[in-house]
Amino acid sequence: MVVLIHHYLHLPFSSPSLSLSYHSSSKRPRVRISASSSSSPMDRQNRRRGGYVDFPHLSAQHRELMLDLVSTVETRLESDLLPSSLSPDVQYFENESGNSQAALHIRSGDKASPIDLVLGSWIHCELPSGALDITTISAYLKSSTDAPRFLIEFLQSSPTSLILILDLPPRKDLVLHQDYLDTFYGDTQLDKRRQELAKVPEVRPYFSSSLYIRCVCSPTAILVSINCEAGGEGRMEEIIRDHVGPVAKEVLGIWLDRCACGGRVVEVHERADLEMRDRLIKKKTIEIDLGSSLPRLFGPDVAGRVLEAIRDAFNT
Amino acid sequence: MVVLIHHYLHLPFSSPSLSLSYHSSSKRPRVRISASSSSSPMDRQNRRRGGYVDFPHLSAQHRELMLDLVSTVETRLESDLLPSSLSPDVQYFENESGNSQAALHIRSGDKASPIDLVLGSWIHCELPSGALDITTISAYLKSSTDAPRFLIEFLQSSPTSLILILDLPPRKDLVLHQDYLDTFYGDTQLDKRRQELAKVPEVRPYFSSSLYIRCVCSPTAILVSINCEAGGEGRMEEIIRDHVGPVAKEVLGIWLDRCACGGRVVEVHERADLEMRDRLIKKKTIEIDLGSSLPRLFGPDVAGRVLEAIRDAFNT
Image (tube, rainbow over all chains, first blue to last red):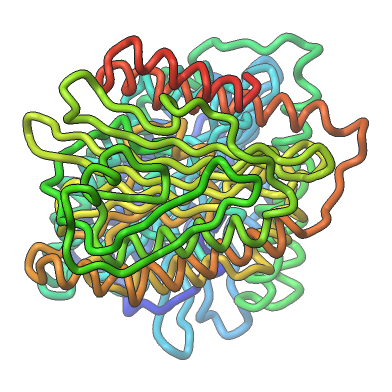
């Protein structure tokens, strides 16, 4: 939703095999996962109307990974995050015909926290050419720290075709700040994770069609497409479980340890530049990505409501 | 020499089939190319001692391309460039045993010109594991303009294995300057050239082992490895002639038209930041790349002399 939506491709989705619920109105949200091999009409109805972590259209391994990542973020940052204040019609929304559905979950950081906000979303669109699923977690930090952000985004245009963006996008011009590059990208050995994933035969480097999005990524960003038509859905599940999952969890762990909870503090007089850069990135993200895509997928009224909520949360 | 030397791999080189001479001491250097199928002892001696555009160790197509690029730059910028002021023992140098050889050619811009300097070089090293050839043209602009630089670098570790970096490295933080990104990278359709080359089956994206070098490249940078073991040397020649050559000439043309001669002027009070960034990039380039590699390849004395000449020219 944050980076890849401008691609919107096509996906015949696989049916869900987990039944989930998510108490987003509580002060302390918790993810509850219960395995279910069948799917009752009530389940389907719940899923269709469901909250963010329902992920109703993802395959089993993909959903399990997303739940793991969401749960890790929320457990680790629980004391930093305020409850979601999104209205129900922004937490879940669909277009008039119901063939585009999405869920959005935003939790802002507590006043004393270095976390600005954590955003999670999924979009499912049945387009004339097929269906498409986009699943995202992104996290922004306040200008009290200059540590990188976190971003993971999946775009699935068929059960055997996936684009993945996984990165700690930098918040400084890395050309000018070698120490920052060393601290967050060299010392953390992030590139090893990219290299590991690149060894999988079905994994290819991916180049975003947006040059701006290429610019905001770090030099160790994982931008890959995974195509396993030959191996089928089973192989994709295997790749997610054995390769994408471990790497994603490691990168998130690095972000939580070194960035979100790393305690790196920026002097008050140095925060204005950082704020300006952060605000610009948020603004451009909305402009390039959501600003044009959401109205096309959900109509102007729904898109207007959702974009307003995102701008509010982004403070742009 | 500027970007790739820290890789130094291994190359059994093909024998040259052109005899060239280069009048680098004249105010108006000219490239003279004369085809020659045989190679006399005198030719070999000339080549071994030769000037920058001898390219004595490159294959025919590779050399022809380099000569074309050098000639295009020097013809177009002739009135901007001062003659080389490098001493002969920096224009050509080798290590004690003579198994590492290199030529360096630097022409600074005239006082009134926006060109800071144009640097050309080749290095040929016979390493224990094989031989390696690195060929470079890079161009720097003064802070009177903020237009991108030019860089082309080939690293050939065997007749069937080549790494290519071809880019207009930006001189501003592109995240903050969307207009700059649009002007030099969007409107120029540079990414189409990258995409064209990516279609060649033997071409794969290349990731520099230096994160800093990844950072200084633009989002449309061509960073590729070309491996054609199956097709042999003939196929490599074909790829250079039919694919690499046309793209390199186009990119150089864009740089000459839009950057070197684009007439984009920066206000005097805005030049300090640009100068600082340019100086830092030059310094890091030397530090990361040449500073550690040249002493290993040419011994401390030769390397010291060459590095001093480069630092002088770079004004760092």
